Image (cartoon, rainbow, N blue to C red; front, top):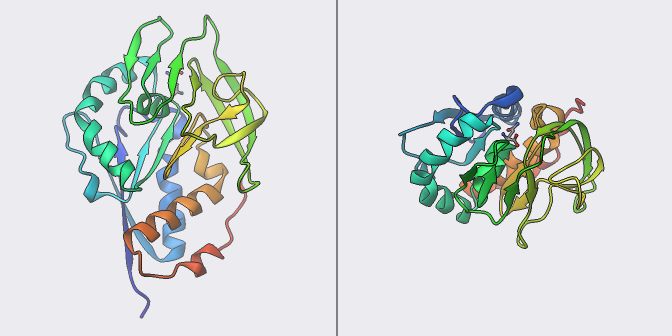
Length: 236
Ligand code: GLN
């Protein structure tokens, strides 16, 4: 009988940070998990709740509006050490838009207020004046050659740190800041992006990458090459 694999997802602030259906990312991880025969469980970890790094294989942190981000910014400081531990131990984390901003040093909101991030990554996010980057976006990941499609809607402009590489180079749209052609950030097994859509529903290949990385980390002695060969659907 085939071995039964289990993966646990922490949906960080899933009740507050879920812009444009970012929850769909978890549904896609469960959908492909089922195809691979993996039992993928998830639970929301929100205000005043403990996040324990050791309990999880994947964390998903969605986008949010400035009001929710201000609330989350205060609470997430209490989870900083465990989130850092999770990232340092190669946990897989998918952070979208407002979630991406709060993993970095700070975010200047539309009113000009500085919202502290947790600084577990080196990027920072400045303000645009009376402008938002809104629209469809297409990027290309330099390492894999994969193209990713999404929809961006953000006020903040993000500048990545020296140990972060972009999720992709912008081919159409704005990306992190509209200037340096970078979109998102990859650091260890953390994927950050401004893509809603949700990103994994439109770019199933990223869901596959995340599930395989999480499986290899949780079950280091097992061979997952059959999952690597698995075809994913394109849904732009
Ligand atoms: N409030 C942030 C901004 O406008 C994040 C937006 C989002 O998560 N969609 O930049």
